Image (cartoon, rainbow, N blue to C red; front, side, top):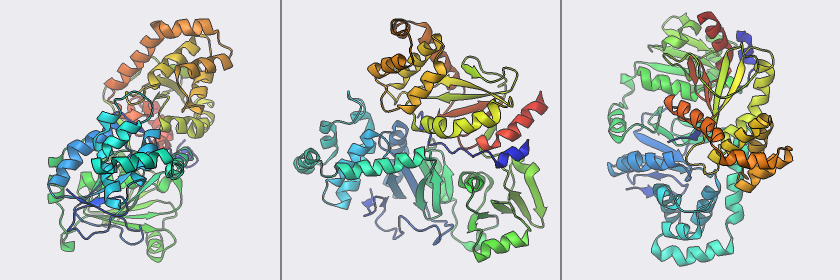
Length: 490
């Protein structure tokens, strides 16, 4: 069973989340006296104790805006060096990017981007799918509004903004991670907002006082470094383990992280010294290792070696034995992978189009697991709830899975008329479909799924539950191990 780990593509999701500086020329923000570059090549610096906070978000992101206002702004006011990056994902993001390009200096452009994130609650509360012209002008300084209006009406930057958005979205759909360059190297992620404090990746739900306390604990003296991680990576799916390493660093007191690559002289020396042909090779010196990976450790003198198989982002939930509801496919006797999804979430569409077919072929069709689809429409997606109800009405006519595929394949078109059109294309009885949508039973099933997701404290979508385990979106590669564990526990 465990050999299946090496043939299963590890899924990294761009998940949909349910929750005074000088602006540099490259779009990042840092204090005037830091003198540190906002972006450096991965080869240049592999680790740093610099007291810098990195924060990245797209604009149409309620959780990102809340984290910026409650966490990042207080840190900036405290004089903390903050590097701020923005990502263009949704249509409103594209319009904000286009508007920022109209301003005549890098300082104005980046102040505009910052104000757009800070004022999300204002412009996102208005009617319409995309931020409107009035809101775009209101974000700018009053002296720039006339020239901004003329620029937006001309559309001179529309193509450039569209290309930037397409580059990001196509990369996500194609399976690529976002790359955020930090002084600790190029960090790959699909989770926004993204927060990195010094060498540690953290959740954005912490508060400013906790960040300040962590920053105060940093020591730039090399003599003080008593624990370290050395990572040798290669070009393989399983090598994308930065999140895991940084979690160890933050939770277990690691003070030094050294990144190497197989093929360079130092990286190959490590591989030869430990006779390892498995990547990634992770060496931990004087580090307390989490219990859930101890069974994969080999001891070599003062080092603990982790090679290739890590339980990254797998959490056992006490008392979680089964989950009600959902739409089941596969053997009812097999352990069930419950997936909570939102029809407007880009990560959900990417998963269903790219990763799910392989998961179904290797695990569901072979009887190793079954799959249960659950609704978890997020409040930031205005069409997701109605789309979920429509899919339940398709279920009542025996076409749930076909309708689900239609919605994910046409994610940008989920208005009321679109939902009826897809029902027509699938040959549904439209009168019964409309009657169902206005009724209560379909809504009750959707609401029940939402309540279950909220009780599980799901951070966003897609979310994976394999009772009694909750999996981060990048942890499906550990499914073969979990199948064995669940079988042993029964």
